[in-house]
Image 1 (cartoon, rainbow, N blue to C red):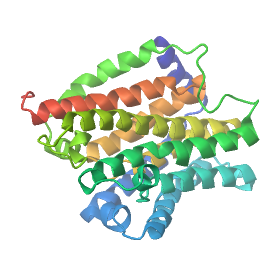
Image 2 (cartoon, helix red, strand yellow):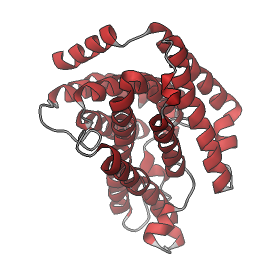
Image 3 (cartoon, rainbow, N blue to C red):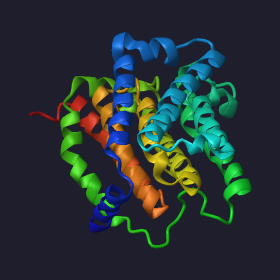
Length: 313
């Protein structure tokens, strides 16, 4: 834990800028207000029936968050030199477009599994969505790394040497009371556990097997997301622009939580900042993967306990 505190202290001393932080936080807060007002995000982006238009609107949303935060930070620190860099434009395009495709309603389930029985369509559709990150995020980023960064750094965070994982389990332990409390909240239980959204009911044949399979696949989504935000966005940008990708990543990270409980969306900014700083310093995403997966599965457990009536305060 001392190592993590040391990393955060060094970041604060060397790179933290209060004006940049406040401007980016205000941008994120403003986007949250708009997204949650009268279900704006769901109506105008998430549930748009035309997939092409949906991808375009995701690109617009992510551009406002990511590039907007970069610009605000540039004004605050009086350094807009990144706008003259072709690398910044290319990386920003990849950072925005790849996740817009990944988050769209493209039927990845049908692409991967073919035609399935109508009774299990929702399960395979969601499984396909979670697994699609390998094709929409990992492979394109690997191609970019192979062409531009191979030999200059590890594949965006896949570094083990010198990385201690023990502190991350301590961080998970600290989160337990908050997650336990969340398991008593109505809006949280409306969203979690996620296996209740796979279109299967307890009376269905092989229900438990489907739930187990989904939970395993569900975890892969957090692996891909952690890689993309703390691996690709932080480390691909950091080699060229230093610490300046951290705050824009945090604002961007907020937007992928729209539609979830507002408390989770707000906390994602601070969680993204913590994990982003650690990835920037350690050049590793393994700790972030532990935290991300740990929180995801603990949320599933506490939501199950909450729905089952085991949590009372």
